[in-house]
Image (cartoon, rainbow, N blue to C red; front, side):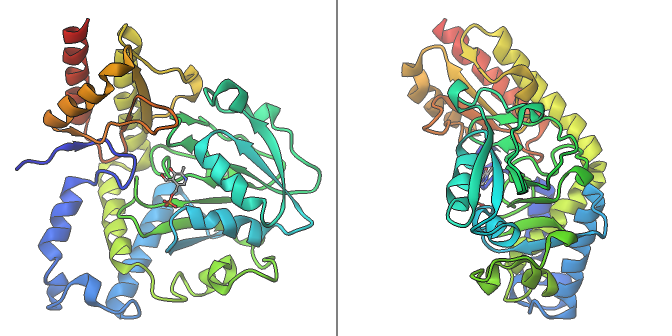
Length: 359
Ligand SMILES: Cc1ncc(COP(=O)(O)O)c(C=O)c1O
């Protein structure tokens, strides 16, 4: 059976060459006579994997030494508690930009540990745009402003972060490594790996070192960024296999030409799909043009009674996981780095045929 095109939002499609490498090395990694998942995280061999993965990740995003990098358990969601616990406190203020489902999750959790101010929101416009940075209403003595630059469910994004008067913390789960970013404008970036980095079970964090050592007294040891950084993400046993695969994805991305080249490919892929949707009179996407995500593209069919049939027939055509999130409805094509351009072409061809039959 051949591989299909997986448009799932995460765990998401992986580069085929990475999967093949992992398959080839599964039983005997580097002649050690065992799988990489069977070796100690403290061994020289695994330490080398960890060092190389971090170096490649830093290289891809131009992360200077003034930032620490973590690869750890807990996905993105754990940081919803870690961020306020480490960077603010019960008396302190933190700003949050409300851009949709995932921002709402972060806001809800932060309220348990600090005073939350909603600096901007597009809720009253059903999250059809990302609140303009010029209109963020930041609170006095704010410890940080939290953003979700790519809302995976709503399909909207912040195209470019400008400099900001307070530290910016970003949940970049679904946008990381998809195109170049100016790291200097962020004080912290975190996310889950299962979209553009590797298997679920791994999360990443990039954090400016001058934000460390201010954690609240109640912060559990495992949720303290300083402890995790001092332990080089190995305070306890890390998710070694996922980390190893992530390292291979970083090498794959570097071989393509890094995030600059990837960004050009991703913009081309997204443009193709948006143009098709905009030109059709059967499909629609209502996110305002400058804020359309290049990673997650939700779209509605002209007749929602056809959703079930669309999903059945697309699955038969080898196009998987196109169902949109229930809060948005319709369909969603997640087209992360590892989705080849042929996948976009196949999807457009199917969508054209489907709509022609129904017109
Ligand atoms: C933007 C964003 N934040 C957070 C999450 C939750 O991630 P995790 O399951 O790794 O905690 C997701 C998952 O899809 C996401 O897309």
